[in-house]
Image (tube, rainbow, N blue to C red; front, side):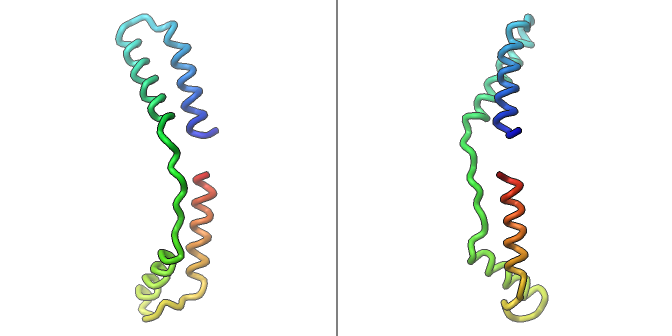
Amino acid sequence: MTKDEALKLALEALENGMKFVWTDPEREAGFVAIDAIKEALAQPQRPWVGLTDEEVEKLDCVQALWQDEGECEIHGVKEFYRNIEAKLKEKNT
């Protein structure tokens, strides 16, 4: 279930439950929650932004300098970063 699906279910439950809420503080809290959910649903989804090749190159150089190798020719580091990026993308979609 996505975040939006969960919010829609919560919104529906709150709106239906408002028919049975009698006290003013409870009604006010319900309306505040409904407004907050509607606002959250109206916000656009932020698209995934991955690393550019230039950013990966810089990460390779930082790794090389950190290891005191003096050059940016580390084999497998770029693939390592790309695998991390792919996994994060998988988890965020």
